[in-house]
Length: 166
Image (cartoon, rainbow, N blue to C red; front, side, top):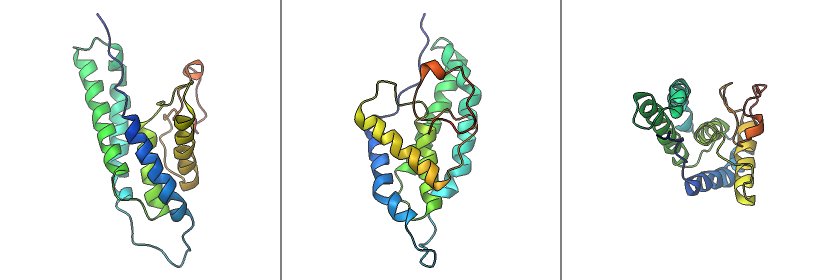
């Protein structure tokens, strides 16, 4: 009798998405006010991402159940739907605006919540820092129950101040 754990999103996808932020985020942040690019499609996906996030959190207790239970299947389905939608946003053409950058950063932040372990290598820590910086610079609207990108087991039971661990 075992319980299943949340599936781990693909590290290669995380790297590719974070590199997109590195390549295009600086350009979006430096756009002159009078030279605004056309709107990005990314922000239109935020309501869906936040709805899927809420469903993921609502069903997350199911990870503690046996893998063949309704509760566990609901948790898996909600998590898979969230990650799929987040990665679809991250895989869109690179954002050209701060709102687009915020949407991509939000998508990556939601998909990779507490994904980077304490003993992460330099690349994982750098990618986490890059996504975290994009979240802060863009003012991305992270949910108050978001726990950040870095997994810190010692702090898991401590209430966060709403900023997460960007």
